[in-house]
Each structure stands twice: as structure tokens, then as C-alpha cells.
Image (cartoon, rainbow, N blue to C red; front, side, top):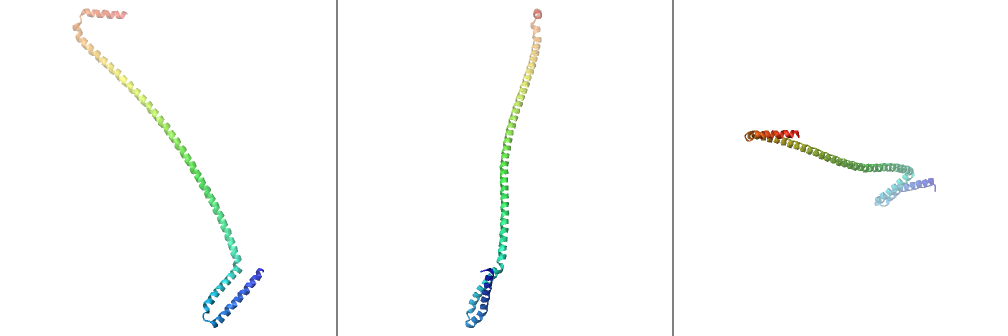
Length: 192
């Protein structure tokens, strides 16, 4: 059967059903009073069949076109979402890689700073040791200087005290012969 034959058969069926729907209520009304609920149910089914026939006849192609268009729009949107997903995943991977690189760089900087700190610490310790040695040496020299000065002062004081005592005791103990003898010893030590 061709499409036009089917459409014609459908129209004849609809007309036939419509005629019986108009003629049937009058016959049913004369026969029984309980006809109304059955008639309402039958009319609902007839209306549904007519609606389906009209939709099939006139709206089938537009609905197919609409669904095809919706399908292509959805496919295009899914493609865009897939591209966006791939872009976001690549960005996430790039950020993770950058994080790994940053952690490695941070650890490298930390190690370098620790090494520089240790080197600087050793330098400071060495400088402190050198300064300590210098200060100790300087303090030792100052102490030796003071000791030498104190020894010199002490010798001078002892000499002065000895001279003072000699000046007091010698005139009473020494006579002129002792003086001559000291002078002779002194003169002989000069010639030798």
C-alpha cells in the first residue's frame, strides 16, 4: 500500500467511526438509560485514536525533523563538553606537574639555603675562634707587659730601698780601706 492509499483508508475509517458516533447516541438513548458511561469511555478512545491519526498524518515529519535537530544539537553540545573536559584535564595535569616542579625547586632551594647556612655558621665559628685567639694573644701580651712593668717597678723599688739602706748602714760599716779596695776592684774590672 502506498502512503496516499493508507491516508485515504484512514480518512474513510475516521468518517465511518464519526458517523456511528453521531448516529449511535440517538439509538442508544432510546434503548437504555445506562448508556452514558459506556458512551463516554468509547468516545475517549475514539478521540484518542483520531488525535493519534492526526499526529501521525500531519506531525510525523516535523517531529522527526525536530528530534533530528535536537539530536544534532545534543551531539554538538556533548562534543563541546568533551573538548572542555579534555582542556580542563590537561590544565589539571599541567597544574599538577607545575606543583611537582615547584616542590622540587622548593626542596632544592631549601637544601641550598641549609648548605649556605652551614657554611656561614662554620665561617662565623672560625672567625670567632680566630678573634678569640687574637684576643687571648693580645691579653697574654698585655699581661706579660704588665708583669714586666711590675717587675721593673719592683726592681727599682728594691734598688731604691737597697740604696737607701746602704746609704744608712754603709757609712757606719765602711772605712777608708774598704773604699780603696772597692775602687781598686772597679778599676781592675774596667781594664779587663
